[in-house]
Image 1 (cartoon, rainbow, N blue to C red):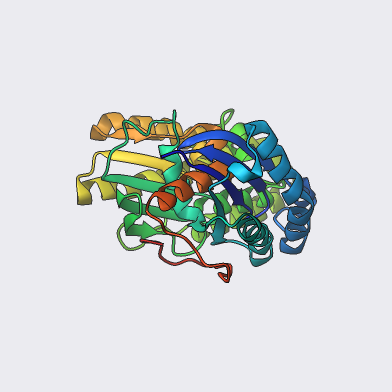
Image 2: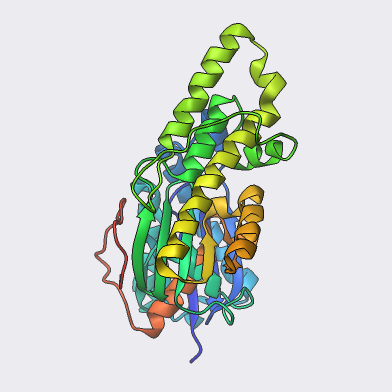
Length: 341
């Protein structure tokens, strides 16, 4: 079967459009929004306005790069949620319009599910990653460990009870007076620092779950107390602060994976989401691989952060199963479960 599919991702502040032929990515356009940097975080209203500006040019560019015409498309895949409602509405409206105008199926995709399914894009490692495997999703909005039994069959083993790992990194960067997004900045500065210089607490919560709000508060109190004594405390200790803070967050993620391996005895782990690009996490995963005799699957950096190619691969597998959506579907800002959706 030959399937040409156009995919749209607009769940937060990146407008992305991809064209796939079966499981092969022909183009993957990502339009970043720099306007949020001055605010230290994503401003939903500004994000939706920029999506409106970017969506049509992104669709046009993706089709041209793929050398695919509109009349060749077999389906339109789009992020239905979770995400910011205004951002989701822009992508969903564009997808519905194309589906209606071209008389081809509309396929709704769960953004979090798509992060994991990016591992099945052609030329990543779809031939070696076999079910079942453990999936660790780490992003700015989500931190979850799942037992993945098939493309659309999952068991949630654990998740964050408050902040996500990426959110904790971004908020930590904001406390330290760094830019946005803060995770990559902390990662870069950490490479010049001592990750044992400062001790941060690891929250004790029920097995396989996470809590990152405490470490963020601990960093805030440390900075408040130390800068009273030394106004140059952050500047003099920035690399060590970043390294210690990041290392503790990564330790919590690795601890969770260790418990999941022991509980399930699953020996394959696939990592997805923006934080999966973090260099400290990747190095600790390699240590875990040797210690636990497990296989670790990471994604190329271009598929770690939000992108439409991951929406497209999820849409492709749904197309094969004829999981099509009605044109009256609405965005889902919080998508609690996604088995068979």
